[in-house]
Image 1 (tube, helix red, strand yellow):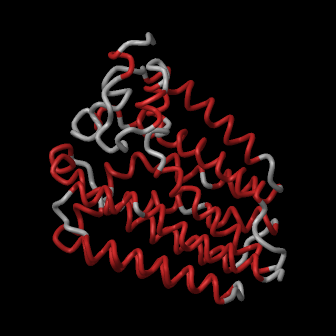
Image 2 (cartoon, one colour):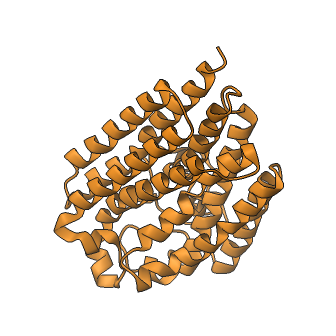
Length: 315
């Protein structure tokens, strides 16, 4: 790739304006950084946050203090690498569909900035980083991490055969709800299972919000989604999914015997989710994208409550 405007490629419509990739990265790097979604960090945030929830809940449950900074940092590196790897794999599989959708036709592969073979080599490099991170944990956590690959591998095909691809994405993206607990205890418990369920419902909700942007193009391309399936009732369905997320998160906090700060974090999380439902307008793609991105803040509110609760238990 040469350092030229054509190599740099167009700025993608769902990337935040003025992001670091489009503003500062060398032009030859930009297609690869876009494949990894470095220009759209919301993806790795949403993959990371269930890991942090679970790590904080596990630390709080045994009274060992706040979650380890090293553990949180490893999950962050792993989330960035594996979000990038998953997105690159998805773009390889979806390259023909992406050419038919306005929002995705300028992605690196369908626009010709990167070949599928080049993307496959880049995918392997990102998987190598993710593997190096995973090997820092105990054997049970390593095995748990590998198990998630089943859902990662099948997800790109789901939009072709079912109206519930968001459910499969939830099974993959929520896996961190198990990982934080597994890394701490070398086993799973009901709090981890409940957090996983909460994160699945949350993911299905926010990805339905995200899919609202593509409704018209998805109909033309034959892409299935919960946003299409729910139709005029999408707002109510998203609200129900968010309610399930709140209920399961409450069950996790209760089963882990956490304290008041965890519940305060849950209340803040719930308030944010219901604010999203209140302002969502089905046909407004710009509002849908803004609300989708705001889920980083929702997830951080719950994490802050869980981490603070774990910290005060040592006082």
